Image 1: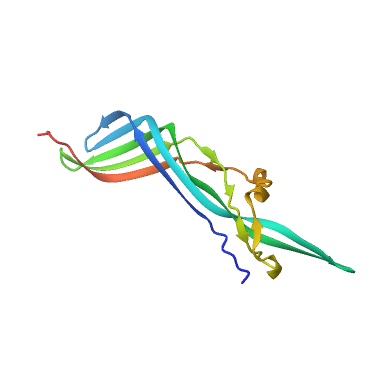
Image 2: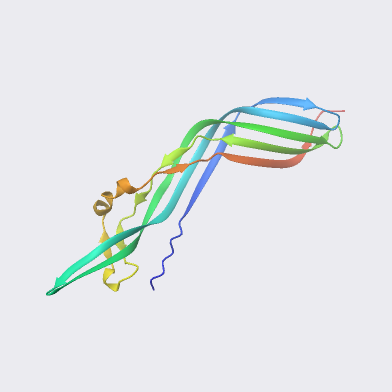
Length: 175
């Protein structure tokens, strides 16, 4: 069959460690909590995909010349990589008081993580063309593919994210 699955996949994780300044404003039944501070991010990323790659088979059987052009599905990957970065976070929360000790809490927080540019790498191997049967088991070595490395564009990974949390707060020690 000439069908190909061109889907790729990947995985990214971001673990923030932060120390915030907190401002709390109390009203009759709600407390408004503003927080912000520096954050250390521990990030990891990996991805794989495919690049459409063309090749030509040209031969002469006198008096005719034949040329076949075919497409190949060459896999590429960004191997699992990790890095740390400094950024920040800012949040606002609302504590709706049910009793003097218990509140329903709702918070929204934005984590600002610096972006990073990562690059795909070719995966050499033996591949079969999409169109013609004469393009079966063509070998692509690392040297063959290295000539095209400058055509690979970087991936600008932007790990910043927004988080919402809902919960119940209990204040110890209040009478």
